[in-house]
Image (cartoon, rainbow, N blue to C red; front, side, top):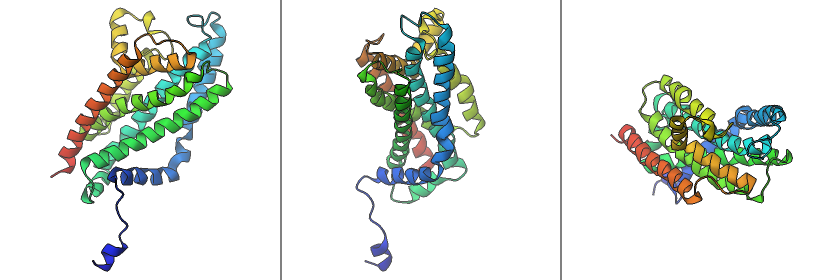
Length: 264
């Protein structure tokens, strides 16, 4: 064994952990820049919509104070926006601009390791953001049930359900303009009409079923059931299976797209 081989640090037993560590090291230097978008902005939204607008909604929604009703929707939508934010330009730039993925594939890392490690970092961002959100909203007294902690595994699955397909999308587009179009024509409408700010039942039938088709509505319904301590509109198993189907399909599409770009 050469001196260089002896000096080289051993690879972890799970190579995807090396990819996760790479993203965590980078995040250690940039976490301050994301405080506003992933923490302060949702809190300001709680104050603006939940406290401000809620003051004019005397009856609440379904007999529930508007602040308590909107918080779980904001939890789910914040998880989606965090996952999308970490799955669009970071993935696109790792292929097109800084080409990090190509460097990683030149090391003894497989496509699944690169993809899995990056997705694990996205889940880390989602979970830490929502954990901070729960602490703040708990101070406002907007969490009516101890089951609110169940929102953490829910947003983890929700984050994976939107991040994995977005990884596949960001890996195949040729320009970052397509990423802006994704936000404009998919993420923003989904946030507005998936039950975050008002009940989906108030929408026309066609739009209502479009809302049901989005992963966000299923996450909102589960989070709302958890924080209010009530039963969801649909079955818990049905919600989880639907989100898992999005995650699995997204993983398969992303792995295929990554393999086409990285494996010559």
